[in-house]
Length: 201
Image 1 (cartoon, rainbow, N blue to C red):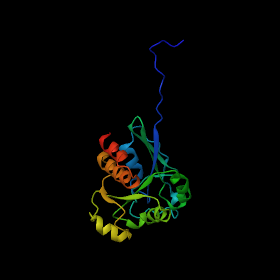
Image 2: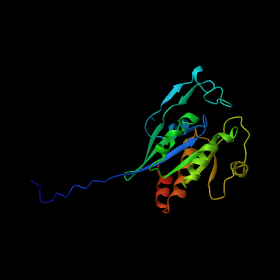
Image 3: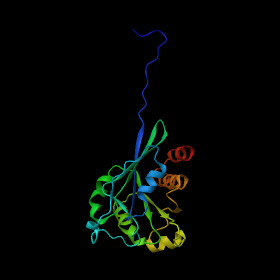
Image 4: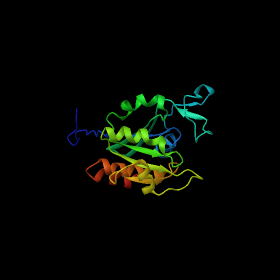
């Protein structure tokens, strides 16, 4: 029996926003998800074995010992009404068939580019351009790599001025957050959502 001063119970349903993190093999997708996720990220990494020789192109990332074989998953709670879910794609050519499924229902994508191997992100750029999918490019500044300017990278990738491009270090939480803020600003007509991210964690 309800008391006279009891109030109806209100339930809040959080808006879930899906974001895809894409790019070539070894570009930093797993690191990016891990740097910003509020929970221990789900990773599907396996040790690279000799069986991948001649199948996966390890040029430029010869010291890499693991590879994502399905996806990376992380979560960021902006506020009680807004949660971001991050899905990192596998980078190897043989797993590209999964990209359509991972991108379905997503608000937009971050394409990571390795300045030492810019050609490794061509497939991701082409994938999202062909589908009219909003995306931003993050040029992951690896230690010891030549630091190209964003306009040099834009020219090399043949991207128009409408595609935001940022230099970043995906090991750094604030750098990763800036990529996500820029994506939200591009993908959403309302600036309120991007502002919530900027003011959040």
